[in-house]
Image (cartoon, rainbow, N blue to C red; front, top):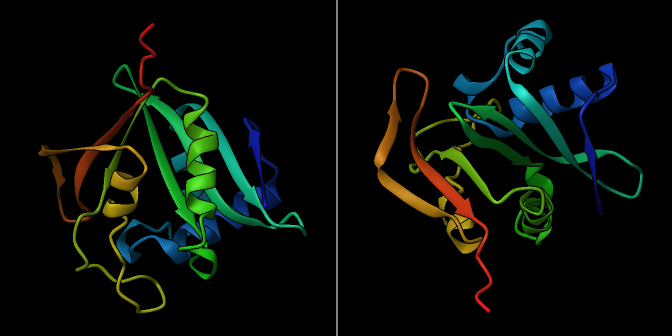
Length: 159
């Protein structure tokens, strides 16, 4: 596996990450049409993509970063067939190497369903293991998502 960073995507890459997102995220967070997904991406500022590619150069994971409200934010997903094998941490580390500080929303319950009908498993412990701090007092709650804010900051080296 390798990680490739991109700013501009081909139509094929966009379609693959649209499918990955719809397969791995809760059903209500998916984009029904490819055009909806493209509009979602177009509305993100300073968008950067990090692809986890297998030996056949197929996208097996996708991290993306963007700038909102004077902060760096990210989204992250790994193909469920390769989860719990260290590839998520590998991709996350590559993404973190590009930032001093990054925020995200993480679903902290297992009440949502994926497109295939399986329960969506909260990745909260994954992020905690990878150095993210959880801000329990900062939540997003609406008809689409119930999530808690997480943040990662690069550790300062004290000399």
